[in-house]
Image (cartoon, rainbow over all chains, first blue to last red; front, side):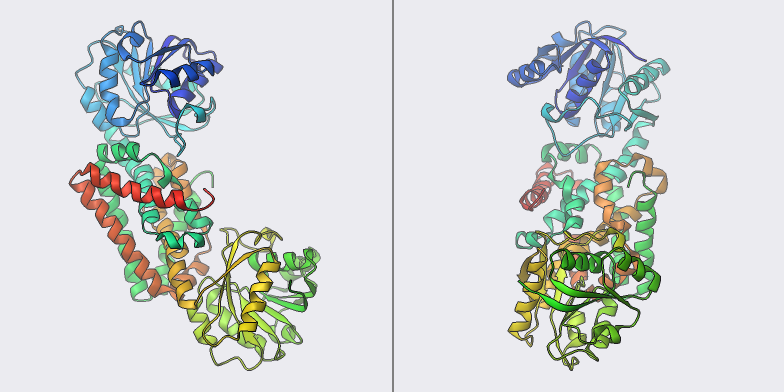
Length: 281
Length: 281
Protein backbone atom coordinates (compact mmCIF):
# COMPACT_ATOMS: atom_id res chain seq x y z
CA UNK A 1 0.00 0.00 0.00
CA UNK A 2 1.52 3.32 -0.99
CA UNK A 3 0.69 6.61 0.71
CA UNK A 4 1.97 10.01 -0.38
CA UNK A 5 2.13 13.38 1.25
CA UNK A 6 2.32 15.59 -1.85
CA UNK A 7 1.46 14.36 -5.34
CA UNK A 8 1.82 16.52 -8.46
CA UNK A 9 -0.08 15.66 -11.62
CA UNK A 10 1.16 17.38 -14.75
CA UNK A 11 -1.72 17.42 -17.24
CA UNK A 12 -5.16 17.03 -15.67
CA UNK A 13 -7.04 15.27 -18.47
CA UNK A 14 -8.70 11.85 -18.67
CA UNK A 15 -5.73 9.97 -17.18
CA UNK A 16 -4.37 12.68 -14.87
CA UNK A 17 -7.86 13.44 -13.60
CA UNK A 18 -8.61 9.76 -13.03
CA UNK A 19 -5.36 9.29 -11.06
CA UNK A 20 -6.20 12.34 -8.93
CA UNK A 21 -9.72 11.05 -8.25
CA UNK A 22 -8.48 7.55 -7.40
CA UNK A 23 -5.77 8.89 -5.05
CA UNK A 24 -8.28 11.02 -3.18
CA UNK A 25 -11.09 8.50 -3.08
CA UNK A 26 -8.74 5.82 -1.73
CA UNK A 27 -7.14 8.22 0.78
CA UNK A 28 -3.68 7.71 -0.71
CA UNK A 29 -2.48 11.33 -0.78
CA UNK A 30 -2.65 14.26 1.62
CA UNK A 31 -2.46 16.82 -1.16
CA UNK A 32 -2.87 16.49 -4.94
CA UNK A 33 -1.62 19.43 -7.02
CA UNK A 34 -2.60 19.78 -10.67
CA UNK A 35 -0.48 21.50 -13.30
CA UNK A 36 -1.93 22.70 -16.61
CA UNK A 37 -1.74 25.45 -19.19
CA UNK A 38 -5.33 26.54 -18.77
CA UNK A 39 -5.92 28.10 -15.34
CA UNK A 40 -9.69 28.21 -15.82
CA UNK A 41 -9.97 24.50 -16.55
CA UNK A 42 -7.71 23.73 -13.58
CA UNK A 43 -10.06 25.75 -11.36
CA UNK A 44 -12.96 23.66 -12.69
CA UNK A 45 -11.10 20.44 -11.84
CA UNK A 46 -10.41 21.86 -8.37
CA UNK A 47 -14.04 22.90 -7.92
CA UNK A 48 -15.02 19.33 -8.86
CA UNK A 49 -12.89 18.14 -5.91
CA UNK A 50 -10.41 16.40 -8.19
CA UNK A 51 -7.31 18.36 -7.12
CA UNK A 52 -6.39 20.52 -4.10
CA UNK A 53 -4.01 23.02 -5.67
CA UNK A 54 -3.58 24.40 -9.17
CA UNK A 55 -0.44 25.59 -10.98
CA UNK A 56 0.33 26.77 -14.49
CA UNK A 57 4.08 26.24 -13.98
CA UNK A 58 5.70 22.92 -13.20
CA UNK A 59 8.66 24.05 -11.03
CA UNK A 60 6.77 25.62 -8.11
CA UNK A 61 4.25 22.78 -8.16
CA UNK A 62 7.03 20.21 -7.87
CA UNK A 63 8.59 21.85 -4.80
CA UNK A 64 8.47 19.31 -1.96
CA UNK A 65 6.65 16.76 -4.13
CA UNK A 66 6.94 13.10 -3.15
CA UNK A 67 5.43 11.84 -6.37
CA UNK A 68 5.17 13.54 -9.78
CA UNK A 69 3.16 11.95 -12.59
CA UNK A 70 3.45 13.39 -16.10
CA UNK A 71 0.15 12.90 -17.95
CA UNK A 72 0.98 15.17 -20.87
CA UNK A 73 1.29 14.16 -24.56
CA UNK A 74 4.21 11.77 -25.16
CA UNK A 75 6.49 14.23 -26.94
CA UNK A 76 6.26 16.59 -23.93
CA UNK A 77 6.74 14.11 -21.11
CA UNK A 78 10.57 14.12 -20.94
CA UNK A 79 10.74 17.94 -20.91
CA UNK A 80 8.01 18.15 -18.24
CA UNK A 81 9.78 15.63 -16.02
CA UNK A 82 13.06 17.54 -16.39
CA UNK A 83 11.30 20.77 -15.36
CA UNK A 84 9.87 19.02 -12.33
CA UNK A 85 13.24 17.64 -11.21
CA UNK A 86 14.71 21.14 -10.80
CA UNK A 87 12.99 21.89 -7.50
CA UNK A 88 12.30 18.32 -6.42
CA UNK A 89 13.76 16.32 -3.54
CA UNK A 90 16.32 13.49 -3.85
CA UNK A 91 13.57 11.12 -2.71
CA UNK A 92 10.97 12.26 -5.28
CA UNK A 93 9.56 9.53 -7.49
CA UNK A 94 8.74 10.54 -11.08
CA UNK A 95 6.59 8.54 -13.42
CA UNK A 96 4.31 9.06 -16.42
CA UNK A 97 1.44 7.49 -18.34
CA UNK A 98 2.88 7.74 -21.88
CA UNK A 99 1.93 5.21 -24.55
CA UNK A 100 5.55 4.92 -25.73
CA UNK A 101 8.51 4.33 -23.46
CA UNK A 102 11.94 3.92 -25.09
CA UNK A 103 12.16 7.46 -26.53
CA UNK A 104 11.08 9.12 -23.25
CA UNK A 105 13.44 7.02 -21.16
CA UNK A 106 16.45 7.56 -23.41
CA UNK A 107 15.76 11.32 -23.35
CA UNK A 108 15.81 11.28 -19.55
CA UNK A 109 18.68 8.81 -18.98
CA UNK A 110 21.51 10.47 -17.09
CA UNK A 111 19.78 13.86 -16.99
CA UNK A 112 17.85 13.62 -13.72
CA UNK A 113 19.80 15.32 -10.95
CA UNK A 114 17.27 14.84 -8.14
CA UNK A 115 14.84 11.97 -7.66
CA UNK A 116 14.21 8.89 -9.80
CA UNK A 117 12.12 8.34 -12.92
CA UNK A 118 10.37 5.03 -13.68
CA UNK A 119 8.20 4.80 -16.80
CA UNK A 120 4.59 3.62 -16.57
CA UNK A 121 1.82 2.97 -19.06
CA UNK A 122 -1.69 2.20 -17.84
CA UNK A 123 -3.63 0.34 -20.57
CA UNK A 124 -6.73 2.32 -19.81
CA UNK A 125 -7.12 4.95 -22.48
CA UNK A 126 -10.29 5.90 -24.26
CA UNK A 127 -11.22 7.85 -27.34
CA UNK A 128 -12.69 10.34 -24.87
CA UNK A 129 -10.43 12.96 -23.36
CA UNK A 130 -10.58 15.72 -20.77
CA UNK A 131 -11.00 15.59 -16.99
CA UNK A 132 -14.79 15.61 -17.49
CA UNK A 133 -14.49 11.95 -18.53
CA UNK A 134 -12.17 11.02 -15.65
CA UNK A 135 -13.24 8.20 -13.31
CA UNK A 136 -11.77 7.05 -10.00
CA UNK A 137 -12.15 3.42 -11.12
CA UNK A 138 -10.46 3.84 -14.51
CA UNK A 139 -7.48 1.67 -13.55
CA UNK A 140 -9.31 -0.98 -11.55
CA UNK A 141 -8.50 -4.48 -12.79
CA UNK A 142 -6.81 -2.98 -15.84
CA UNK A 143 -3.18 -3.64 -16.59
CA UNK A 144 -0.46 -1.04 -16.04
CA UNK A 145 2.98 -1.69 -17.49
CA UNK A 146 5.97 -0.45 -15.49
CA UNK A 147 9.16 -0.15 -17.54
CA UNK A 148 12.39 0.27 -15.58
CA UNK A 149 15.59 0.61 -17.58
CA UNK A 150 18.81 -1.24 -16.70
CA UNK A 151 19.84 1.69 -14.51
CA UNK A 152 16.63 2.06 -12.52
CA UNK A 153 17.09 1.30 -8.79
CA UNK A 154 14.93 -1.65 -7.70
CA UNK A 155 13.36 0.31 -4.89
CA UNK A 156 12.00 2.96 -7.28
CA UNK A 157 10.54 0.24 -9.51
CA UNK A 158 8.86 -1.35 -6.51
CA UNK A 159 7.42 2.01 -5.38
CA UNK A 160 6.03 2.61 -8.85
CA UNK A 161 4.43 -0.82 -8.95
CA UNK A 162 2.95 -0.25 -5.49
CA UNK A 163 1.48 3.06 -6.68
CA UNK A 164 -0.45 1.43 -9.52
CA UNK A 165 -1.48 -1.51 -7.38
CA UNK A 166 -2.88 0.93 -4.84
CA UNK A 167 -4.99 2.54 -7.62
CA UNK A 168 -6.52 -0.87 -8.31
CA UNK A 169 -4.42 -1.80 -11.34
CA UNK A 170 -2.71 -5.08 -12.09
CA UNK A 171 0.96 -4.46 -12.81
CA UNK A 172 3.46 -6.09 -15.18
CA UNK A 173 7.11 -5.18 -15.60
CA UNK A 174 8.70 -4.86 -19.05
CA UNK A 175 11.83 -3.33 -20.54
CA UNK A 176 11.17 -0.09 -22.50
CA UNK A 177 11.99 -1.61 -25.95
CA UNK A 178 9.90 -4.71 -25.18
CA UNK A 179 7.02 -2.44 -24.17
CA UNK A 180 7.25 -0.48 -27.41
CA UNK A 181 7.39 -3.58 -29.63
CA UNK A 182 4.35 -5.13 -27.90
CA UNK A 183 2.30 -1.94 -27.89
CA UNK A 184 3.10 -1.30 -31.55
CA UNK A 185 1.21 -4.53 -32.29
CA UNK A 186 -1.56 -4.39 -29.67
CA UNK A 187 -2.37 -0.67 -29.70
CA UNK A 188 -0.59 1.50 -32.27
CA UNK A 189 -1.19 -0.74 -35.29
CA UNK A 190 -4.93 -1.12 -34.47
CA UNK A 191 -5.18 2.68 -34.32
CA UNK A 192 -3.46 3.11 -37.66
CA UNK A 193 -5.61 0.36 -39.23
CA UNK A 194 -8.84 1.78 -37.81
CA UNK A 195 -7.90 5.16 -39.24
CA UNK A 196 -7.00 3.70 -42.66
CA UNK A 197 -10.26 1.73 -42.76
CA UNK A 198 -12.30 4.84 -42.00
CA UNK A 199 -10.33 6.94 -44.50
CA UNK A 200 -10.87 4.26 -47.15
CA UNK A 201 -14.68 4.56 -46.88
CA UNK A 202 -16.25 7.03 -49.34
CA UNK A 203 -18.59 9.45 -47.49
CA UNK A 204 -21.56 8.35 -49.64
CA UNK A 205 -21.12 4.77 -48.32
CA UNK A 206 -21.59 5.79 -44.69
CA UNK A 207 -25.34 5.09 -44.65
CA UNK A 208 -24.51 1.45 -45.32
CA UNK A 209 -22.06 0.71 -42.54
CA UNK A 210 -23.19 -1.77 -39.92
CA UNK A 211 -21.95 -2.71 -36.44
CA UNK A 212 -18.74 -4.29 -37.76
CA UNK A 213 -17.49 -1.13 -39.47
CA UNK A 214 -18.41 0.92 -36.42
CA UNK A 215 -16.48 -1.38 -34.07
CA UNK A 216 -13.46 -1.48 -36.36
CA UNK A 217 -13.22 2.28 -36.79
CA UNK A 218 -14.21 3.47 -33.27
CA UNK A 219 -10.69 4.46 -32.19
CA UNK A 220 -10.12 6.47 -35.37
CA UNK A 221 -12.14 9.20 -33.61
CA UNK A 222 -9.28 9.71 -31.14
CA UNK A 223 -7.18 12.89 -30.80
CA UNK A 224 -5.11 13.19 -33.99
CA UNK A 225 -2.33 15.32 -32.46
CA UNK A 226 -1.79 12.84 -29.63
CA UNK A 227 -1.76 9.87 -31.98
CA UNK A 228 0.59 11.59 -34.39
CA UNK A 229 3.04 11.95 -31.51
CA UNK A 230 2.62 8.35 -30.34
CA UNK A 231 3.12 6.93 -33.83
CA UNK A 232 6.17 9.13 -34.48
CA UNK A 233 7.79 8.34 -31.12
CA UNK A 234 7.34 4.64 -31.78
CA UNK A 235 7.69 4.67 -35.55
CA UNK A 236 10.29 1.89 -35.94
CA UNK A 237 8.30 -0.76 -34.02
CA UNK A 238 5.10 0.53 -35.67
CA UNK A 239 6.63 0.22 -39.14
CA UNK A 240 7.64 -3.35 -38.31
CA UNK A 241 4.06 -4.10 -37.20
CA UNK A 242 2.62 -2.54 -40.38
CA UNK A 243 5.02 -4.61 -42.47
CA UNK A 244 3.92 -7.84 -40.76
CA UNK A 245 0.28 -6.86 -41.19
CA UNK A 246 0.85 -6.10 -44.88
CA UNK A 247 2.14 -9.67 -45.30
CA UNK A 248 -1.12 -11.08 -43.89
CA UNK A 249 -3.03 -8.75 -46.20
CA UNK A 250 -0.99 -10.01 -49.13
CA UNK A 251 -1.87 -13.62 -48.27
CA UNK A 252 -5.51 -12.53 -48.36
CA UNK A 253 -5.09 -10.97 -51.78
CA UNK A 254 -3.49 -14.11 -53.17
CA UNK A 255 -6.17 -16.36 -51.68
CA UNK A 256 -9.01 -14.23 -53.07
CA UNK A 257 -7.35 -13.66 -56.44
CA UNK A 258 -7.01 -17.43 -56.92
CA UNK A 259 -10.34 -18.20 -55.22
CA UNK A 260 -8.76 -20.69 -52.80
CA UNK A 261 -11.43 -21.72 -50.26
CA UNK A 262 -9.03 -23.66 -48.00
CA UNK A 263 -6.60 -20.76 -47.83
CA UNK A 264 -9.40 -18.26 -47.13
CA UNK A 265 -10.82 -20.52 -44.42
CA UNK A 266 -7.40 -20.97 -42.86
CA UNK A 267 -6.84 -17.18 -42.77
CA UNK A 268 -10.25 -16.65 -41.14
CA UNK A 269 -9.52 -19.42 -38.65
CA UNK A 270 -6.18 -17.89 -37.61
CA UNK A 271 -7.98 -14.62 -36.88
CA UNK A 272 -10.86 -16.23 -35.01
CA UNK A 273 -8.53 -18.38 -32.92
CA UNK A 274 -6.52 -15.39 -31.66
CA UNK A 275 -9.66 -13.30 -31.15
CA UNK A 276 -11.34 -16.08 -29.15
CA UNK A 277 -8.20 -16.42 -27.01
CA UNK A 278 -8.22 -12.75 -26.05
CA UNK A 279 -9.58 -12.06 -22.59
CA UNK A 280 -12.94 -10.37 -22.08
CA UNK A 281 -14.74 -10.87 -25.38
CA UNK B 1 -48.49 -2.56 -44.42
CA UNK B 2 -47.96 -6.09 -45.64
CA UNK B 3 -49.88 -9.10 -44.33
CA UNK B 4 -49.23 -12.71 -45.32
CA UNK B 5 -51.20 -15.90 -45.00
CA UNK B 6 -48.35 -18.41 -45.18
CA UNK B 7 -44.69 -17.47 -44.72
CA UNK B 8 -41.85 -19.96 -45.10
CA UNK B 9 -38.48 -19.26 -43.54
CA UNK B 10 -35.63 -21.42 -44.81
CA UNK B 11 -32.94 -21.45 -42.14
CA UNK B 12 -34.16 -20.54 -38.65
CA UNK B 13 -31.03 -18.90 -37.20
CA UNK B 14 -30.36 -15.40 -35.94
CA UNK B 15 -31.92 -13.65 -38.95
CA UNK B 16 -34.60 -16.22 -39.85
CA UNK B 17 -35.64 -16.51 -36.21
CA UNK B 18 -35.78 -12.73 -35.82
CA UNK B 19 -37.95 -12.37 -38.94
CA UNK B 20 -40.29 -15.08 -37.62
CA UNK B 21 -40.56 -13.39 -34.22
CA UNK B 22 -41.14 -9.95 -35.75
CA UNK B 23 -43.84 -11.30 -38.13
CA UNK B 24 -45.69 -12.99 -35.27
CA UNK B 25 -45.28 -10.20 -32.73
CA UNK B 26 -46.56 -7.65 -35.25
CA UNK B 27 -49.42 -9.91 -36.38
CA UNK B 28 -48.21 -9.90 -39.98
CA UNK B 29 -48.59 -13.61 -40.79
CA UNK B 30 -51.24 -16.25 -40.14
CA UNK B 31 -48.75 -19.08 -40.27
CA UNK B 32 -44.93 -19.11 -40.18
CA UNK B 33 -43.27 -22.37 -41.27
CA UNK B 34 -39.60 -23.00 -40.52
CA UNK B 35 -37.34 -25.20 -42.66
CA UNK B 36 -34.04 -26.57 -41.35
CA UNK B 37 -31.76 -29.58 -41.40
CA UNK B 38 -31.99 -30.26 -37.70
CA UNK B 39 -35.50 -31.39 -36.69
CA UNK B 40 -34.71 -31.18 -32.99
CA UNK B 41 -33.59 -27.56 -33.15
CA UNK B 42 -36.66 -26.70 -35.25
CA UNK B 43 -38.87 -28.22 -32.53
CA UNK B 44 -37.10 -26.03 -29.99
CA UNK B 45 -37.79 -22.94 -32.11
CA UNK B 46 -41.42 -24.04 -32.39
CA UNK B 47 -41.66 -24.68 -28.63
CA UNK B 48 -40.31 -21.15 -28.13
CA UNK B 49 -43.28 -19.87 -30.14
CA UNK B 50 -41.06 -18.62 -32.96
CA UNK B 51 -42.58 -20.74 -35.73
CA UNK B 52 -45.85 -22.66 -36.19
CA UNK B 53 -44.75 -25.55 -38.41
CA UNK B 54 -41.44 -27.33 -38.95
CA UNK B 55 -40.03 -28.98 -42.08
CA UNK B 56 -36.74 -30.60 -42.98
CA UNK B 57 -37.50 -30.40 -46.72
CA UNK B 58 -38.10 -27.20 -48.62
CA UNK B 59 -40.62 -28.38 -51.26
CA UNK B 60 -43.52 -29.44 -49.00
CA UNK B 61 -42.97 -26.38 -46.80
CA UNK B 62 -43.25 -24.08 -49.81
CA UNK B 63 -46.59 -25.53 -50.94
CA UNK B 64 -49.15 -22.72 -50.88
CA UNK B 65 -46.60 -20.24 -49.53
CA UNK B 66 -47.23 -16.53 -50.12
CA UNK B 67 -43.78 -15.47 -48.99
CA UNK B 68 -40.55 -17.49 -48.84
CA UNK B 69 -37.43 -16.01 -47.22
CA UNK B 70 -34.11 -17.83 -47.62
CA UNK B 71 -31.94 -17.22 -44.54
CA UNK B 72 -29.34 -19.87 -45.34
CA UNK B 73 -25.61 -19.30 -46.03
CA UNK B 74 -25.04 -17.27 -49.22
CA UNK B 75 -23.72 -20.10 -51.37
CA UNK B 76 -26.89 -22.11 -50.66
CA UNK B 77 -29.51 -19.40 -51.18
CA UNK B 78 -30.02 -19.77 -54.96
CA UNK B 79 -30.42 -23.55 -54.73
CA UNK B 80 -32.84 -23.23 -51.79
CA UNK B 81 -34.96 -20.67 -53.64
CA UNK B 82 -35.06 -22.94 -56.72
CA UNK B 83 -36.23 -25.85 -54.56
CA UNK B 84 -38.95 -23.65 -53.08
CA UNK B 85 -40.22 -22.49 -56.49
CA UNK B 86 -41.09 -26.06 -57.54
CA UNK B 87 -44.30 -26.28 -55.49
CA UNK B 88 -44.97 -22.58 -55.13
CA UNK B 89 -47.76 -20.43 -56.56
CA UNK B 90 -47.37 -17.92 -59.41
CA UNK B 91 -48.04 -15.19 -56.86
CA UNK B 92 -45.39 -16.33 -54.36
CA UNK B 93 -42.80 -13.71 -53.43
CA UNK B 94 -39.27 -15.00 -52.78
CA UNK B 95 -36.57 -13.06 -51.03
CA UNK B 96 -33.44 -13.68 -48.95
CA UNK B 97 -31.14 -12.04 -46.41
CA UNK B 98 -27.80 -12.80 -48.08
CA UNK B 99 -24.82 -10.49 -47.61
CA UNK B 100 -23.93 -10.67 -51.32
CA UNK B 101 -26.38 -10.14 -54.15
CA UNK B 102 -25.02 -10.24 -57.73
CA UNK B 103 -23.96 -13.92 -57.67
CA UNK B 104 -27.26 -15.11 -56.17
CA UNK B 105 -29.34 -13.04 -58.58
CA UNK B 106 -27.43 -14.12 -61.67
CA UNK B 107 -27.77 -17.76 -60.58
CA UNK B 108 -31.55 -17.32 -60.34
CA UNK B 109 -32.11 -15.11 -63.40
CA UNK B 110 -34.42 -16.83 -65.90
CA UNK B 111 -34.70 -20.01 -63.81
CA UNK B 112 -37.73 -19.23 -61.66
CA UNK B 113 -40.82 -20.81 -63.22
CA UNK B 114 -43.33 -19.79 -60.55
CA UNK B 115 -43.31 -16.65 -58.40
CA UNK B 116 -40.85 -13.78 -58.28
CA UNK B 117 -37.53 -13.35 -56.51
CA UNK B 118 -36.29 -9.99 -55.18
CA UNK B 119 -33.01 -9.89 -53.29
CA UNK B 120 -32.81 -8.32 -49.83
CA UNK B 121 -30.04 -7.67 -47.34
CA UNK B 122 -30.87 -6.42 -43.84
CA UNK B 123 -27.80 -4.70 -42.33
CA UNK B 124 -28.47 -6.28 -38.98
CA UNK B 125 -26.06 -9.15 -38.53
CA UNK B 126 -24.11 -9.94 -35.42
CA UNK B 127 -21.17 -12.14 -34.51
CA UNK B 128 -23.75 -14.16 -32.59
CA UNK B 129 -25.68 -16.81 -34.42
CA UNK B 130 -28.52 -19.28 -33.79
CA UNK B 131 -32.21 -18.67 -33.11
CA UNK B 132 -31.40 -18.37 -29.39
CA UNK B 133 -30.03 -14.90 -30.17
CA UNK B 134 -32.99 -13.89 -32.35
CA UNK B 135 -34.93 -10.75 -31.40
CA UNK B 136 -38.23 -9.41 -32.73
CA UNK B 137 -36.73 -5.91 -32.82
CA UNK B 138 -33.56 -6.85 -34.71
CA UNK B 139 -34.57 -4.88 -37.81
CA UNK B 140 -36.13 -1.86 -36.11
CA UNK B 141 -34.65 1.37 -37.40
CA UNK B 142 -31.91 -0.59 -39.14
CA UNK B 143 -31.40 -0.39 -42.86
CA UNK B 144 -32.45 -3.15 -45.26
CA UNK B 145 -31.24 -3.00 -48.84
CA UNK B 146 -33.60 -4.31 -51.52
CA UNK B 147 -31.86 -5.14 -54.80
CA UNK B 148 -34.14 -5.66 -57.82
CA UNK B 149 -32.46 -6.53 -61.12
CA UNK B 150 -33.42 -4.91 -64.43
CA UNK B 151 -35.97 -7.71 -64.97
CA UNK B 152 -37.69 -7.54 -61.59
CA UNK B 153 -41.37 -6.44 -61.85
CA UNK B 154 -41.96 -3.20 -59.95
CA UNK B 155 -44.80 -4.69 -57.96
CA UNK B 156 -42.58 -7.43 -56.54
CA UNK B 157 -39.98 -4.83 -55.55
CA UNK B 158 -42.66 -2.78 -53.80
CA UNK B 159 -43.99 -5.84 -51.95
CA UNK B 160 -40.47 -6.66 -50.76
CA UNK B 161 -39.89 -3.12 -49.56
CA UNK B 162 -43.27 -3.18 -47.76
CA UNK B 163 -42.28 -6.44 -46.05
CA UNK B 164 -39.13 -4.93 -44.52
CA UNK B 165 -40.89 -1.70 -43.64
CA UNK B 166 -43.52 -3.71 -41.81
CA UNK B 167 -40.75 -5.38 -39.76
CA UNK B 168 -39.61 -1.93 -38.64
CA UNK B 169 -36.69 -1.53 -41.05
CA UNK B 170 -35.77 1.47 -43.14
CA UNK B 171 -35.43 0.44 -46.78
CA UNK B 172 -33.14 1.56 -49.60
CA UNK B 173 -33.12 0.24 -53.17
CA UNK B 174 -29.88 -0.59 -55.00
CA UNK B 175 -28.82 -2.58 -58.02
CA UNK B 176 -27.14 -5.91 -57.17
CA UNK B 177 -23.64 -4.87 -58.40
CA UNK B 178 -23.91 -1.51 -56.62
CA UNK B 179 -24.88 -3.36 -53.44
CA UNK B 180 -21.89 -5.66 -53.71
CA UNK B 181 -19.41 -2.85 -54.33
CA UNK B 182 -20.71 -0.82 -51.37
CA UNK B 183 -20.84 -3.80 -48.99
CA UNK B 184 -17.34 -4.88 -50.00
CA UNK B 185 -16.13 -1.57 -48.52
CA UNK B 186 -18.50 -1.18 -45.56
CA UNK B 187 -18.76 -4.78 -44.36
CA UNK B 188 -16.57 -7.36 -46.10
CA UNK B 189 -13.31 -5.40 -45.98
CA UNK B 190 -13.75 -4.59 -42.25
CA UNK B 191 -14.25 -8.31 -41.60
CA UNK B 192 -11.12 -9.25 -43.51
CA UNK B 193 -9.10 -6.49 -41.80
CA UNK B 194 -10.37 -7.44 -38.32
CA UNK B 195 -9.36 -11.01 -39.04
CA UNK B 196 -5.91 -10.02 -40.33
CA UNK B 197 -5.33 -7.75 -37.32
CA UNK B 198 -6.20 -10.58 -34.91
CA UNK B 199 -4.10 -13.10 -36.84
CA UNK B 200 -1.16 -10.67 -36.79
CA UNK B 201 -1.14 -10.57 -32.95
CA UNK B 202 1.21 -13.12 -31.33
CA UNK B 203 -0.65 -15.11 -28.61
CA UNK B 204 1.83 -13.95 -25.93
CA UNK B 205 0.84 -10.31 -26.64
CA UNK B 206 -2.83 -10.89 -25.79
CA UNK B 207 -2.47 -9.83 -22.15
CA UNK B 208 -1.52 -6.38 -23.41
CA UNK B 209 -4.42 -5.60 -25.71
CA UNK B 210 -6.70 -2.77 -24.65
CA UNK B 211 -10.15 -1.60 -25.70
CA UNK B 212 -8.97 -0.48 -29.16
CA UNK B 213 -7.69 -3.90 -30.19
CA UNK B 214 -10.83 -5.53 -28.82
CA UNK B 215 -13.11 -3.18 -30.79
CA UNK B 216 -11.10 -3.62 -33.98
CA UNK B 217 -11.06 -7.41 -33.85
CA UNK B 218 -14.55 -8.12 -32.47
CA UNK B 219 -16.05 -9.33 -35.77
CA UNK B 220 -13.13 -11.70 -36.38
CA UNK B 221 -14.96 -14.04 -33.95
CA UNK B 222 -17.70 -14.55 -36.56
CA UNK B 223 -18.54 -17.86 -38.25
CA UNK B 224 -15.59 -18.70 -40.52
CA UNK B 225 -17.56 -20.90 -42.94
CA UNK B 226 -20.17 -18.21 -43.51
CA UNK B 227 -17.56 -15.52 -44.04
CA UNK B 228 -15.54 -17.70 -46.37
CA UNK B 229 -18.66 -17.99 -48.54
CA UNK B 230 -19.42 -14.26 -48.40
CA UNK B 231 -15.88 -13.27 -49.33
CA UNK B 232 -15.71 -15.80 -52.16
CA UNK B 233 -19.11 -14.82 -53.60
CA UNK B 234 -18.05 -11.18 -53.58
CA UNK B 235 -14.37 -11.65 -54.23
CA UNK B 236 -13.92 -9.19 -57.13
CA UNK B 237 -15.39 -6.18 -55.28
CA UNK B 238 -13.61 -7.31 -52.09
CA UNK B 239 -10.28 -7.52 -53.93
CA UNK B 240 -10.83 -3.99 -55.22
CA UNK B 241 -11.55 -2.79 -51.67
CA UNK B 242 -8.42 -4.53 -50.33
CA UNK B 243 -6.36 -2.93 -53.09
CA UNK B 244 -7.64 0.55 -52.21
CA UNK B 245 -7.00 -0.11 -48.54
CA UNK B 246 -3.45 -1.30 -49.30
CA UNK B 247 -2.80 2.06 -50.99
CA UNK B 248 -3.78 3.93 -47.81
CA UNK B 249 -1.54 1.55 -45.84
CA UNK B 250 1.30 2.29 -48.22
CA UNK B 251 0.88 6.04 -47.66
CA UNK B 252 1.18 5.31 -43.95
CA UNK B 253 4.38 3.35 -44.47
CA UNK B 254 5.93 6.18 -46.50
CA UNK B 255 4.91 8.82 -43.96
CA UNK B 256 6.33 6.84 -41.03
CA UNK B 257 9.47 5.74 -42.86
CA UNK B 258 10.27 9.40 -43.65
CA UNK B 259 8.95 10.66 -40.29
CA UNK B 260 6.65 13.23 -41.93
CA UNK B 261 4.46 14.76 -39.19
CA UNK B 262 2.21 16.69 -41.60
CA UNK B 263 1.56 13.62 -43.69
CA UNK B 264 0.84 11.47 -40.60
CA UNK B 265 -1.49 14.14 -39.22
CA UNK B 266 -3.31 14.39 -42.52
CA UNK B 267 -3.82 10.61 -42.68
CA UNK B 268 -5.17 10.58 -39.12
CA UNK B 269 -7.44 13.52 -39.94
CA UNK B 270 -8.92 11.79 -43.01
CA UNK B 271 -9.79 8.81 -40.83
CA UNK B 272 -11.23 10.87 -37.99
CA UNK B 273 -13.31 13.00 -40.36
CA UNK B 274 -15.02 9.98 -41.93
CA UNK B 275 -15.44 8.25 -38.59
CA UNK B 276 -17.02 11.37 -37.05
CA UNK B 277 -19.37 11.64 -40.03
CA UNK B 278 -20.68 8.11 -39.58
CA UNK B 279 -24.06 7.93 -37.92
CA UNK B 280 -24.48 6.62 -34.37
CA UNK B 281 -21.03 6.92 -32.83
